[in-house]
Image 1 (cartoon, helix red, strand yellow):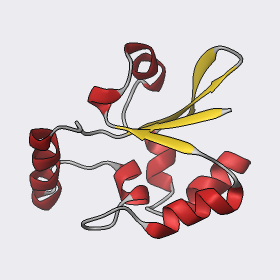
Image 2 (cartoon, rainbow, N blue to C red; image 1 turned 90 degrees about the vertical axis):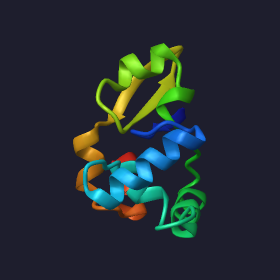
Image 3 (spheres, helix red, strand yellow; image 1 turned 60 degrees about the vertical axis):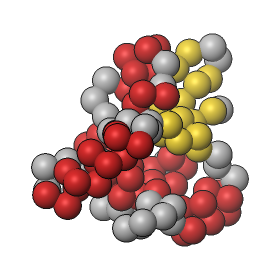
Image 4 (cartoon, helix red, strand yellow; image 1 turned 30 degrees about the vertical axis):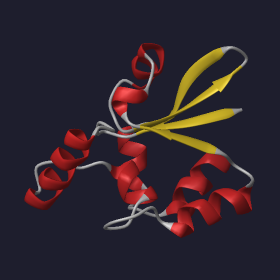
Length: 112
């Protein structure tokens, strides 16, 4: 199974800047970002948790995802999976928010 996490942010320089400013102002959020990134850089514990669980998650910004991936994700952020030729949403924005920034909670939900 192939997992793809889609951030509620664009991967351009301007998109990243908008997200940081919005985050500081409290007007923008992305619970997937909270799980995968610290204040400045990617979280080592996220990648360690994925490695330990033998789960690979490709991370994309919304402008990097295909229209098919975005349609399946619906509301962002989301974690989708590709299996048997089809995409399906496995963790919604609400599910990711319930992980409360914890990589371990994310992995636990995927393994359930």
